[in-house]
Amino acid sequence: MSAKKSSKKATLAKAYSLSKRGEGPNPIDIHVGQRLRLRRTLLGLSQETLGEAVGITFQQLQKYERGANRISASRLFNLSQVLGVPVTFFFEDLPASGPEAPLDGGSETQEFESMARRETLELVRAYYRIPDEGVRRRAFDLVKALAGEPEMSGQD
Image 1 (cartoon, helix red, strand yellow):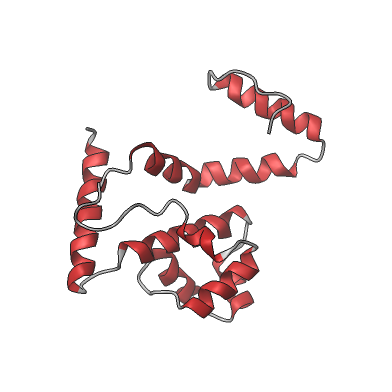
Image 2: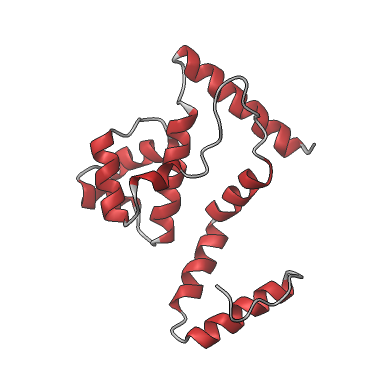
């Protein structure tokens, strides 16, 4: 197991035990905040712009994204409308919680982390700005070929 995975396991275990004692953010609040940040950045919105759209400060939005402050149901509903996603989006890929749940999210955790990286978000935004669908498909095939994966032209 890599040092990074061990560190992540320890961080998750600590977050769970702290939240059980009321001393830190709940892992669910952290997850919801990460999903909020992911969607905001995929849309290319700043914290200030999104905050204005829902009537909160960018500082409050930062706290939501870190999981430091819990998002109320009405605020989450409002955010989902502004971001164009169902409320369930914020809970997708939520790992099981509790002491009996595995702390190693494995490839799903790695996949989520790679989706949250700025480089990935910029790549996705640039990809969808390509106006010609055929060119976009060829770019997709090129990236897959460079990554050593077989071509998938004609499929979505």
